[in-house]
Length: 299
Image (cartoon, rainbow, N blue to C red):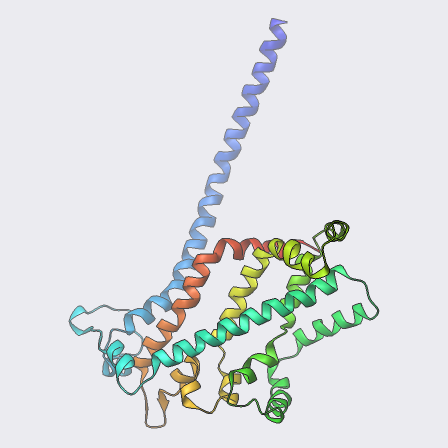
């Protein structure tokens, strides 16, 4: 018996030694992977760092040297910020217009797309597959092809120069519908049936059972859709005519004139326009990652 115990202990010690040796062999690989991602991170951060430094430089220096990451405290100031906020520009008007438009558009996109995706995932009806193929087809069509027909329709409905004309054509986003449908496909239909047995209405099942489960996917799509809405330039530029309704991308575009481009002000405006999306992602990055990974493996 003692010999068996001794043999087992030797086998255990040998196995532990092999595990430690295997971990030791993996250390160089892990270091190389970490170093690679560190280099990639630095490369991605450099443009934002350069943009940030350029916001404190005089316009003449920016025009002469372009975007330069060098720091010269004596030649750096908050002058560009002061000019953008106070002189002849409506930065805060543009900012809050974009904020209002983004919140309204994203909220409606998520709500409508979740309803449509729920129907595709949980109900069986005639023509279901054909309609879903149509959704996939819309995802493949570039917006530029649909732009003129959409503008003609918006103009016919007298929605030009209004935020409704920007929001309504994109209220049911094909990519969001597809993502939500894939996410919901991983939810057992027995959950819905259990809700019906308990006497819940169809709307009650959706709002009380399904929506709480979809929180990670909502966070992921909210960030992506908010990024698209916040940075949207072409469609709002076509629809809006009144300068008081301009969004931030349109407002920054007006700083570029035939008589000279205010690069220093553009740098400040561009940097400030990045911050809301950055803050949004940092606050909800956990839900974003959970939603993207869950949506990728379900269905």
